[in-house]
Image 1: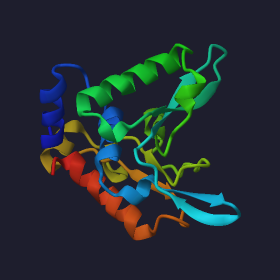
Image 2 (image 1 turned 135 degrees about the vertical axis):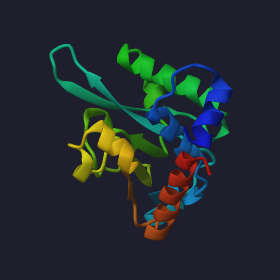
Image 3 (image 1 turned 45 degrees about the horizontal axis):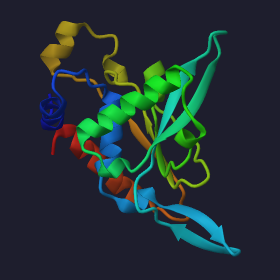
Length: 196
């Protein structure tokens, strides 16, 4: 368990914590403010919009009764002002209300950066699409052993000290976010997951 994961457990107790909620908390903590910026035209002129807070959009996959799927993106408002326990409670509340069909119009407003988790259905890598008003969306792949080890026996994996990996991708609006800034953000996410 990483130091970050240990700290989370110490904050909220024995409540189960998903990788998704940990990553979503990390997005608001990664401290690269430009990742929260977006592009807009004001009076016909290009502008960089820097919201005062992070509105973290949660892409939530919903299984419909007829077997089809729907995707909704609801926002945790001012996510950057919440401690982990508050963030986790807000995350659980939004997901629960989405699964029960209880989201309101207000829940869909205010996303400034989003996180999507196609890894939840086994996808290793994805390039999500940006929505208007956002400068970035972070994609989370499945947590799996590297491809060359996926058929290996558990004993071999343990002997070779092979662990599962996860791929994070960043789709960003190049008009306001540069590649190096996105790279810094992903590096900081990596450090947070390692407990640094």
